Image 1: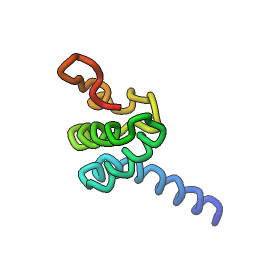
Image 2 (image 1 turned 180 degrees about the vertical axis):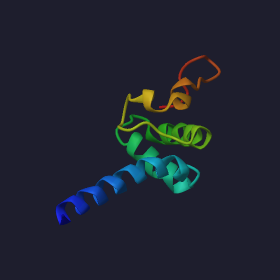
Image 3 (image 1 turned 90 degrees about the horizontal axis):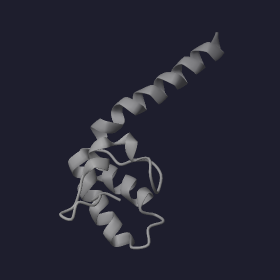
Length: 89
């Protein structure tokens, strides 16, 4: 019985985190943390952090990992710069 309760508690905590994360995107520390992680391997890190921060504030999400996974955040994926190239790193 205790194992079942512990398993249910763990599952509910994991699920609640996935629902709370988009709400936390309004917090600037959310964008900072996610962008530091996203740009950790970038060649031009200051530029990556700048544009990631802009995109995070507008889209309220940042894809996981250091590259790719843009399908996780369509707004982030679809933003283009004035030259028609992807704006978000």
